[in-house]
Image 1 (cartoon, rainbow, N blue to C red):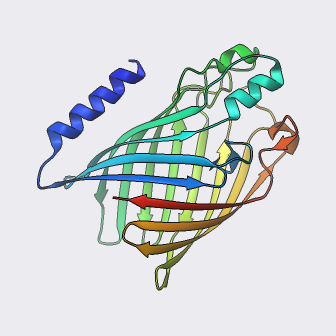
Image 2 (tube, rainbow, N blue to C red; image 1 turned 180 degrees about the vertical axis):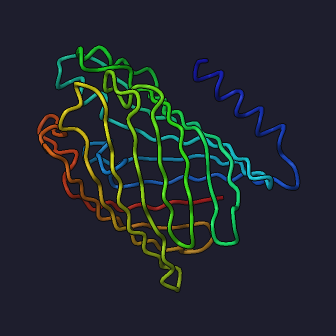
Length: 251
């Protein structure tokens, strides 16, 4: 199924499921650098991002989110191959429910679509960057543990099916609209070409709710990779420690 078909089906589901028991929300924002799982996606440049989310009172949800990226083009340029793709679109759906009063769960599927990418052309160790993951999460109080499993190759790594990401985070309310969210994640990348690419990432994010739908974030991000040079392209260290500032409007 191509991207247009997936978006059409998602839109149809949103329309068909709309009712007094459903909610549709939109968001748009900007960050000083797009980091995902600790790794730079825009090589130190800002990113404009936005999405929409549909949530039904039954627990079922659907969503789409997009951002500009540069990492596919950057990697291609470093390899001497033109593989321009500067847009990421994520399509996801799942179900949330409660096990007990304090314990809830979240299961779903996420498709990362890197529009028009030809990442597989940069070499034998590369594959199409589009990625499919299933995930399950448990939330107890302020803490959430989430596990994601790749059913496709992971973000352009050849023969990397079965890669996984484990994420532990917690959000604490500091009062007056402030919150703090510590995070640790473990990215395990499978495949004979992925030696030295698995890593652990850390982050502490300070959030501020300004009201009227506006929120701001200040995040300190660090990555512990076995070989940092694996994440250096054209002189830019994509896994270096970084402070990322962001603002988002939800309506």
